[in-house]
Amino acid sequence: MNVELLLNYLESLHGDYMNLKQGAVASYIPELAKADSEWFGIALVTVDGRVYQAGDTRQAFTIQSISKAVTYGIALEDYGVESVMRKIDVEPSGEAFNSISLEPGTGRPRNAMINAGAIAAMSFIAGDSFEAKQKRMLDAYKNYLGHEVSIDEAVYRSEKSTGHRNRAIAYLLRNSNIIESDPDGLLDLYFRQCSILVNCRDLAILAATLANGGVNPITGVRALKSRFVPKVLSVMTSCGMYDYSGAWIYEVGMPAKSGVGGGIMAVLPGQLGIAVFSPRLDEYGNSVRGLAVCKRVSSDFGLHMFHAGRTTAASVIHSTYSAAGVASKRTRHTEQSKLLRELGHKIVVLELQGDLMFASAEVVVSEAMKGAQEADYLVLDFRRTASISDGAMNLLGHLVQALDGKGKAILFTGIRDEFHLARAIRKRVPHVRDLPLLKCEDLDDALEWCEDQLLAGQSSFIAQHAPLAVQAFCAGFAAAELSALEALLEPRTYLKGVHIFRAGEPASGLFFILSGQVSVVVPVDHRRNGRISTLSAGTAFGEMGVLDRGVRSADVVADSDMSCLYLDYERLERGGSALGVQLTLKLVTNVARVLTQKLRQATLEIGSLKS
Image (cartoon, rainbow, N blue to C red):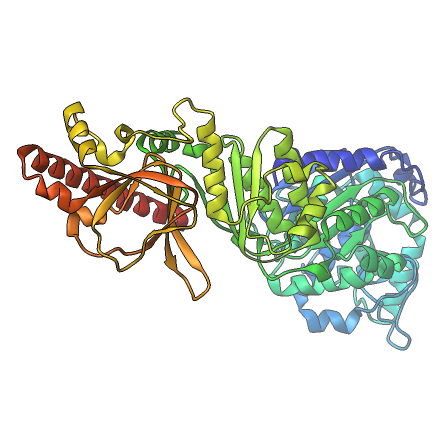
């Protein structure tokens, strides 16, 4: 999605919730109470490494309980799933984050997202000393975030001096042999973990790294082995939002983790990570604005994880090209063809494929906005798309709105559910019916429409009538030669719908179109014909007979009332004069030249379609 477009959305979202004043800054840790309650940032990072942010996304704060997801991943990686499971369960507690929620009989914490489980998880960080364990922990954050992290010493001391409940939990864990080393050393590491400084952008990158299978999408560095990522996300899904976790997954539908520092990070696997920072908390310890923003984004773009499709974002673009490389099937006269070769870059086509979800639609929108920097007309072809999610439709609505505001034309072709899409776009663009958006039957029709718009603004555009002199097959004819040719031509007219000739008939003559339009078609099945090309005033058809005097290879049908000049090949040959031979030679030369140009154009188009 174009930076400007999604930034506008995030900034609008930021403005919508800036005045949400419910909740209060955490005060049970004295240093946290110093946070400015008006700080508010939103960041979104895709698995392709695109970063979007609005508000106070660079404001540092302590990670607090969000660190539990990272620590759990380290524990799984350092000691394995079975070892960790023997000491830490994966069941929701349904209780507050600092509850003493231990399994009866074993003393095993319910999960790694509550304090008891997180303290136990510290014992699974590899290292022979406190310093080694801390280095292992900080190195993991460096891999997740792409930079070194530091610890807020003031918050650490504040946590340590007030962490009496956590001390009680740690000693209960020691009593049950859930932790088998000095509780005070693990607690110190736990307090330091909670005091790591991050910002909203960092949390979005952390979330996107988990969404990307454990690989930081910006640096390409692996932060967590891929086989452990589903384990971490599963526990985040069921337990990451404390005793609000059930409502969260029901309403928002993404694995998430919150912290009392005001941060929330949410993960949409395979697509993106979202983070919100705002210190005002609700009764569960979750950011009030963070909850509201995540609910809104999930709703606006259909990000609930159970809406996930089957296609990755990177594979959604089948091909991208301009009309300079791939033109429509309409054959135009010499001047028009020359203009379209010069101006064709102003028409850009994106052929799409697979399932269109938020992340893949974000790629499409980004590419479309990039194309619109140079182009005036964009065509998005959906023939190969299997489905379009509500979130993707919402993004497409933003795209249409943005391009319409820039005076650009956009056309969609191959849409299966035009009504649903048009309704989604109408929310953003009320006058969608006045746009060419869904008015073309197929991709070729859209290309032709765009070409006509380009040509309509040029002085050499000839819409109704074209003299013989502009014909490509008459290039290089002197005035006397053109007059001699005209003397051999027979004026003809055909009504709309008439077959001018059919495939298999003798190729006995050449037709120069003066006005109107015809289509060259071949049967596709017993009910339909496939269009090979469309020709209008200034072009000709039937030229293959000049070379081989064979039979017609396709049908030609008048699309409208049509007038033309007909050249009978036998009449041309019967002339027998030197001038007649000269005319024949020039016609053959021009036909060969035009056919060569068509072959080169076809080669160019094949190359463009493969890119």
